[in-house]
Image (cartoon, rainbow, N blue to C red; front, side, top):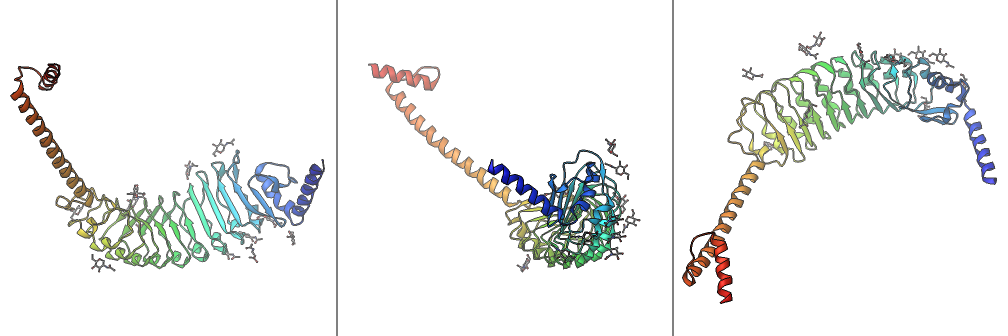
Length: 371
Ligand SMILES: *[C@@H]1O[C@H](CO)[C@@H](O)[C@H](O)[C@H]1NC(C)=O
Ligand SMILES: *[C@@H]1O[C@H](CO)[C@@H](O)[C@H](O)[C@H]1NC(C)=O
Ligand SMILES: *[C@@H]1O[C@H](CO)[C@@H](O)[C@H](O)[C@H]1NC(C)=O
Ligand SMILES: *[C@@H]1O[C@H](CO)[C@@H](O)[C@H](O)[C@H]1NC(C)=O
Ligand SMILES: *[C@@H]1O[C@H](CO)[C@@H](O)[C@H](O)[C@H]1NC(C)=O
Ligand SMILES: *[C@@H]1O[C@H](CO)[C@@H](O)[C@H](O)[C@H]1NC(C)=O
Ligand SMILES: *[C@@H]1O[C@H](CO)[C@@H](O)[C@H](O)[C@H]1NC(C)=O
Ligand SMILES: *[C@@H]1O[C@H](CO)[C@@H](O)[C@H](O)[C@H]1NC(C)=O
Ligand SMILES: *[C@@H]1O[C@H](CO)[C@@H](O)[C@H](O)[C@H]1NC(C)=O
Ligand SMILES: *[C@@H]1O[C@H](CO)[C@@H](O)[C@H](O)[C@H]1NC(C)=O
Ligand SMILES: *[C@@H]1O[C@H](CO)[C@@H](O)[C@H](O)[C@H]1NC(C)=O
Ligand SMILES: *[C@@H]1O[C@H](CO)[C@@H](O)[C@H](O)[C@H]1NC(C)=O
């Protein structure tokens, strides 16, 4: 009984604390969106977290009716975390989101979200992660995103974005992750991206990029994953990529790369996967690369000489097969000789007539022992 009394009091106290700030005002936005009574305390809902009288975190992935991003979201000035993953969210991202100066995480996913990326998002000076993915969003990347100096991760994959990759992204000096894959970006890859020295993963695959791979990418010493596959990249593979000594995965497949494969790639001692298939590379595979213990995909380069170039796996397979064949021959010879010797002995003791040699030998033996 006392416990229940205590709990009820505790809830009243907590509600009182929530009511301190402008919670009821802020909840109007959420209640409007969720079709709930205006005065309800939204802090009690799943996915709404309040602190010091303000809504600070929103996770919406459970809403089961169509809704749109209300401009009033821009009034939730203490919001730090906004995560929406929903097929029910319709329409554009309002520019007012750019007013949420405390926002550190903005993650939006939904195939029915349309419109373009508001340039006002460049005002979110505290943002550490911006993720707008798998949506129907079109247009270009606003150059104002270059102002997000605290940004560590920028995911814009699987949208319908187009145009060039803005040079201003070079200013995102804290960026560790850049994923622009599966869009319609065109033009050449800006060499300025080579200045993002903290980059760990860079993915621009499945776009319409042309021109060469910037040699400046050789400066990205922290890079572990580089994927430029499925574009229209031409020219040769810059030998500078051999300086990326932390690289684990390099994917340049499905482009129009020419020239020979630089032997410098053999310096990538941490490499696990290398794909250069579906290009127009020439020459032969450098021995420095054959030495690496990696998954290596090089098919569909019509002019690449691969006939003489056994990679290490094939060598291991051949040596292994030869060894097994030799071993089998030795065992066979030993057993055969033994049997022959034995049969010869038998023949000396008791000549055997026709029929299966083994069975006969056995029968003869039992007959002999009986005697
Ligand atoms: C509540 O909102 C008003 C204006 O909308 C503002 O002047 C006031 O400072 C806010 N109070 C708190 C505790 O944030
Ligand atoms: C939700 O929106 C989709 C796409 O606009 C539409 O096809 C569907 O009928 C809407 N559903 C309701 C219940 O309004
Ligand atoms: C809330 O947002 C709307 C539209 O963005 C604006 O007109 C209104 O003044 C805002 N209200 C407060 C209390 O800031
Ligand atoms: C919020 O943003 C909109 C559009 O970006 C702007 O017009 C408005 O003045 C801003 N409101 C506040 C309260 O900062
Ligand atoms: C929220 O933003 C204000 C003004 O931009 C800043 O003074 C405050 O420290 C921020 N709070 C947090 C938790 O980032
Ligand atoms: C995406 O947008 C196009 C036109 O802009 C529209 O035809 C299509 O239905 C949209 N897709 C979804 C999943 O809403
Ligand atoms: C927000 O961004 C827009 C467009 O990038 C800009 O015009 C506006 O001045 C910015 N507002 C603030 C308060 O920084
Ligand atoms: C990029 O695509 C647009 C629209 O399709 C086109 O106008 C522009 O010329 C293209 N740019 C390059 C460099 O190919
Ligand atoms: C890619 O660019 C070429 C021209 O450079 C153009 O013909 C093609 O339609 C573009 N593809 C896409 C998916 O934008
Ligand atoms: C390379 O990237 C393309 C496009 O994302 C993908 O389809 C392919 O599987 C990747 N290859 C490897 C070996 O990871
Ligand atoms: C990288 O490889 C090239 C050619 O294979 C070699 O000449 C060079 O010394 C190597 N560089 C480093 C830093 O190991
Ligand atoms: C590959 O290069 C050769 C000669 O440079 C050229 O004739 C051929 O058209 C190219 N093939 C492709 C698929 O780009």
